[in-house]
Image 1 (cartoon, rainbow, N blue to C red):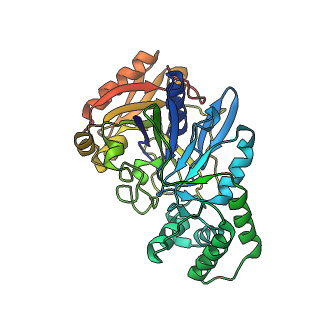
Image 2: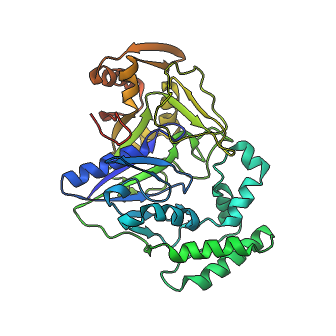
Image 3: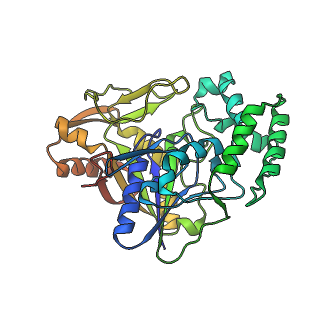
Length: 377
């Protein structure tokens, strides 16, 4: 069984959705049965995929959903039934298949409200999805939620009572009804693991980026989740293919890192999911900061992971069309700014080959995605 793991090399927004869809498309092309596993993060993901002109932003579902690929939410996923139900309604005609681990962490409206009303959480950075509060609640109150396959309403009402008691707030009848109705209306099955066979290709789709990791990111502007390989077991990791994703420039949506050098490319009219909002603030761009990429690899000790589990690393470069359109790429390495002419894909790939000479890990391939629909050249 083939296993592929998709990770962002910076602060999220790198193109993990396009990469995941491309891997699913490749699997189908070769007669395999892809399955996408969401193994960290939650509904704060906004992975944009486009297929045959149809666009969808994957929040709960995996980025193979437009291809009919099932999604499995692992025990480390933050499951928000309201977000999942709202997303399902945009996908209903495709009858998307969703499988949920019984021990996944469930996000309630009380967690969301507690997060957006917490001044420190807002200051440190949040997507307004209640992820940090849910993380804290499960850790501090020793919640042992076991999501049942059937007869969920009584379980949900008692669960909401426990969450409400944890926060010492009054009952919000409207929000609780919405939560329960969403969970009951959403089509999904509960299972500790999905059904797989020798022909299955499992794509583990990461959320956010390596530099937002709760242990290895830049504090305090991190996420309460492992964004690297920590949530995956040795059997999953053994000889797996790991796809590390970067844009041809650096982005940051939210508090924290400020690009050291502005991006000279004109992004007017460029397809972009990220927009300024009241929680994350502005969407920041800068030239490709390769020092950051190297730092992400070093902080996560990817060389140790590679040696221990015999991992095969691949680099995925997205938004390659911008480098070709502008005829150059600017990048920062060893605190020096360089400008490299780019006239074709060979130039772009050769640039990354040179840059990866300083990487602590060995790469098997460099791939370039040119367009938002995940088409690769």
